[in-house]
Image 1 (cartoon, rainbow, N blue to C red):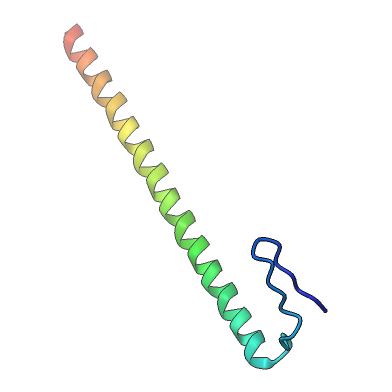
Image 2 (tube, rainbow, N blue to C red):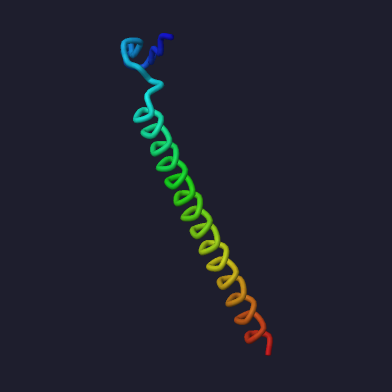
Length: 71
């Protein structure tokens, strides 16, 4: 089995990629990638929520000022 990465051109066919240590490293990499994606999506959700709240507060303030000006 030849694993060739086109971006770098490295050939990893000489490595035994089925060893338990290699499998464990792959699992750890998957977990790290999953944790990173989870954190990134969580932060994105928080930013969207914050922007939505700010916009809502702005419109609410404008509406209150408009009502106060009418009175």
